[in-house]
Length: 249
Image 1: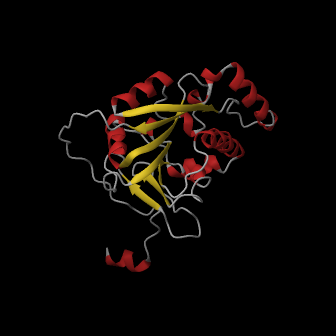
Image 2: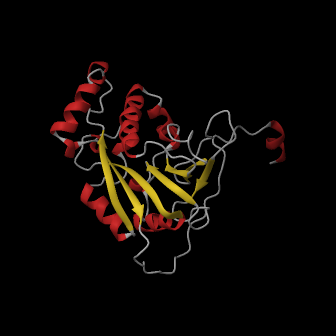
Image 3: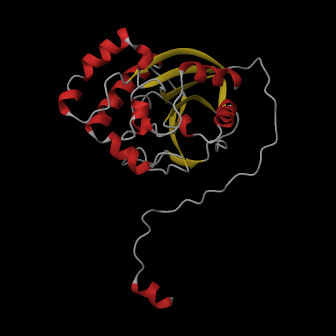
């Protein structure tokens, strides 16, 4: 079950969420410095991180799963958001250069099908970065953050999934070494925890970040897909019926 869009927004507007955003963004920047004139798609709830990359891209989209819900992004501009089903993305083959998955893979109903779909839409040589909760980390055990929901991964599990779905794992990073506490006294020590964690206990990070490249020289078996559920977008909340509506009933 996906995290709810309302809960995700509230988390990233909280002090803890802003610090988590900063920690993960710094790790992402070490993998993707600039994306000049490339097409970038964020899948899941990648909005807080897309802001750091979209200035250099040719275009950037925020694809949000139907089970999660969607919000308009970027604010006060023409919307680049789409409500999607992550196993059937509304893109032609080989149409994007980069994909950033955040709050996505751990909620996927069928991770292999999702990864195969990403392989389809990525251009030759296209790159993918996945941010997932680390099953060894503290954040995966705390349900008051989005990283405590869904299925966490170990580095070995993530690497195996990438190889099975025709991706070549590359550079990696870790983030969220500080405890997911709401206490200000603990959050003030975030920088100390982050520096010490990278040196002393990298295997216990809150999230694992792995970059992978689309592989072209190995075929994948093709199987017929079963029919899928159809999601009908609705506006929530739907409002209160008017007097005319009540009279017509």
